[in-house]
Length: 188
Image (tube, rainbow, N blue to C red; front, top):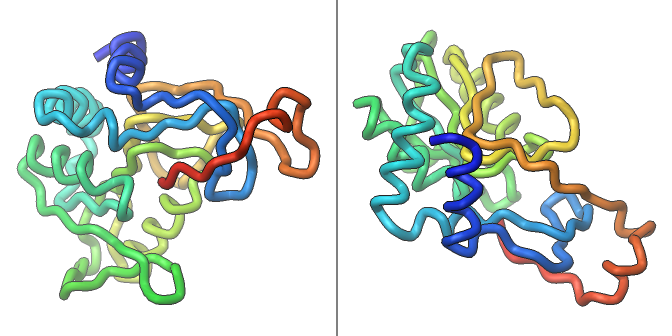
């Protein structure tokens, strides 16, 4: 899939939202990418998963590790497409990500981190830390959408299907048009 085709899919499915959004970081934005909407229909999941799987195939990962919630669907699809093991990290009571349900990585296990949308990379970095704490080898990071404002560095290869230039703002210094629109936290 080309970036233009990915953008068309995001628009067609209603995954690219317009308004005034409160991001997980606390920053504000006029646009929000709700990839769950693009992942409602299995033919779309298959197309997106196949396109991203092709980009990361040569990393020779053994396992896909996805942070919940955003990475769950696309992470599982990429694991299915590549025939890999699939694990996910989920929030613990303190809000941090953890491997639960008996999931574990072995030392040296080549792991691919998969997320739906990356903005500042916080959840990806938490997931990388989980893999590294288990002495796993992080082979790379893959995301459907890179909406970062600056170049991200995870210490390994990073792949995405599309990079969207979506401006974010400090909540204490909002432009007048955003001040006029009620802010919503759509969930991520």
